[in-house]
Length: 248
Image 1: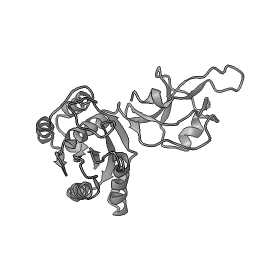
Image 2: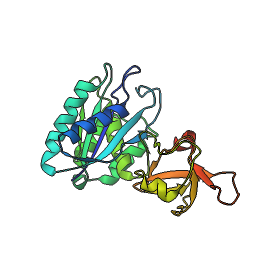
Image 3: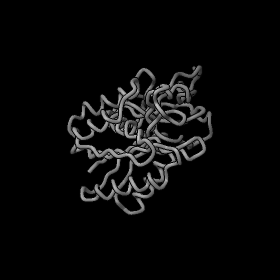
């Protein structure tokens, strides 16, 4: 069974970020041999004065392959973990959704995209979670993080939002490698240009200031843009900058 697990609003300005806590939650799950996690995606939500957030208003989500009978235990562990590890003054929310059991999938995905542009309410989040058969719970403070955690599940499920947590370090910056080498040595599924062109395995690309893939079409994708190099054997593409991937 595939679960989408998302947490939001677990930190304060002095504490570990939500991304770090999500990684620690994965460690808690895997050390019990309860399943296998896919990489974490960060989903940027609406930044607005009426929304309480720490620094960027983003939620963290991952897919987790497990056995059906373990789902209640995973939910309990997730709730206990947030109550124990979330920072003072935070408002953590937990969302756990079994993909095969989710009804009203379009509404859940739409909620995620709305959360990028609108101020939404806890009442609406809880109402949709009940309708869709999704677990949603708050574990401290105002519990406003339930909005972002449900939104993160919708965005991850939609497969076209978010960037993967952390950056990939396989060679020094400004090293040229082939697309095939990049894919073989990382979790990246394919390399696309900003216009959507898929680069062939033998194409050389330049590793720029960062190698940070995004979630597109349900796949882990490294985006690239043209270099100014045109000589024989020189890479015509380089990995996108931090500012470019911030759009995802």
